[in-house]
Length: 143
Image (cartoon, rainbow, N blue to C red; front, side, top):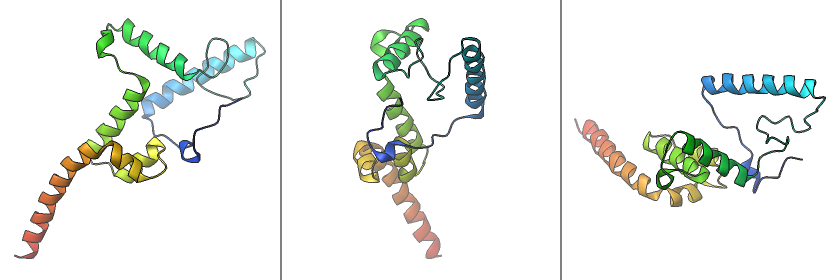
């Protein structure tokens, strides 16, 4: 059984790069072959499964991420956790000018106020940029 999400806004579509889509489709194809050979039917039709054919727990994902970082020799003190990846993505998107409403929906926040509180430090920087753009626009009007 697929675990329930914390809130209705937690159910969302997340964009991925075409290259990742190809990799995930290949993984799904390999899983299907294994399932057919082992007479296993996946009731969730999930892409990510543990070795015992269950949806990985949060702890399992964290352990796997840690193992991957260990394998590529990232020192433990410099490693990032799953929540850190989420925060990094949001910060990066906001720094690139992606609208707060979209980032909020992508994160599954109930409303933009939650996102604005969490990323207020980045938004202050953007406000300075917006102020400059406003002054430039007003200057154009006065010409």
